[in-house]
Every structure is written in C-alpha cells, then in structure tokens.
Length: 64
Image (cartoon, rainbow, N blue to C red; front, side, top):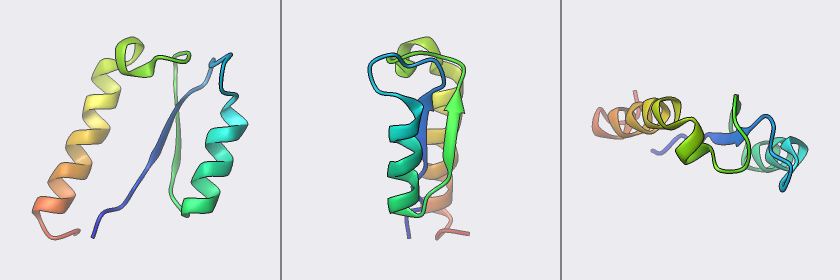
C-alpha cells in the first residue's frame, strides 16, 4: 500500500503552500514543506530524493 506525501516549496510564489496543505488534507497525507520555491525538484533535490527513496523502500517492504 502506497503512503503518499505532499511535498511543497515553503516559498512557492506560483502555488501557495496553502494549496499543498489542502491537497494533503484531501488525500489524508502528510504535508512536507521544503525550503524552496516552485521548482523543489531542482532546488531541494537531496530532500526530494530522500522522501522518494523512503516511499520506494516502504513499498518494497510491503508498506511497513
């Protein structure tokens, strides 16, 4: 079972963090604010990779 997370740039001027918070609420998923703007994949690459690796690891271990 996949456990989604909503990663969002804390300083995003195009999509306000409140939109990410609302998305997380609707998905019943954790909201993770990263120290970046709109393009967190580039701005916060190590942190984004860490979160993706944790999700992949969780899926591989059966969601534990």
